[in-house]
Length: 212
Image (cartoon, rainbow, N blue to C red; front, side):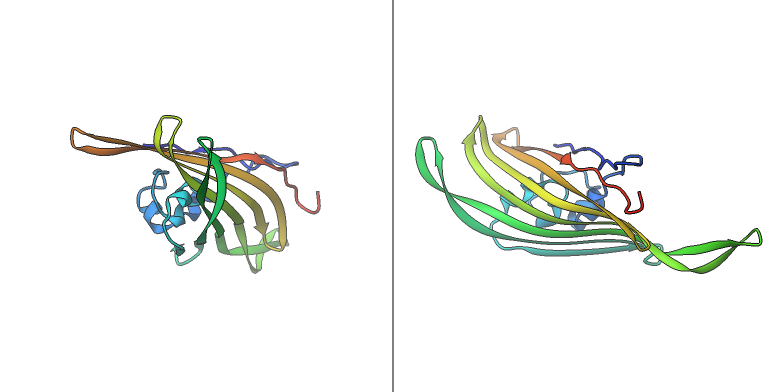
C-alpha cells in the first residue's frame, strides 16, 4: 500500500515541468506500473529514497529501456554502500546503519527532425535529442520500534536536474523524502503490512534557459 506525492520542477520563465523521475525506475518497479513505493530495491531510489534503507548489501543496478526503435530511451544507474554512525536512540548510544547511494537517470527522445523554413516549406537539416537527466545522492536507514511502527525506513534524495533540448540546457536542484512503515501482523494469513509514501520535489529551485 502506498502513494507517490510529486510536485513539478518550476521554471522561472515558463510553465511547470513534469517530473520525469518515475520513468527512471528499474525493471521491477516498471513491471508493477511504478506505483509500489514499498519495494526493497536499489532501482527504486528515484521512486522512494526510503527503499535504500532496507538494503542489506552493496547493490548495483542498471536499467535500459528503449521504445519505438530506440527513439525513446530511459536509463538508470544506481549504487549503494553501507556505513555506520553512533546515534543516541532511547537515551543510549546505538551504532546505526545507513545506506549512501549515488544514482544517474536519463529520459530522452532522440532523432527528432530539425527543420528550417525556406520558400514557405520546411526543409530538414538534421536531428537532435531532448529530454531530462538527473544526478542524485541518497541517504537512508531503518529504525526499529519507533512512533508505533515495527520497522520504519526513511530516506532523502538531493539531486541536480537538467532539461536539455538540442544544444541548450537548464538546471535545477531538488530534494525528495520518503518513508516505508512495516507492521508485523501475523493474523488472518497476513504476515506483515507495509505503507510507503515518498514526496518528490519537496523543495526545488527554479530554472530558466540561458537565453532568457
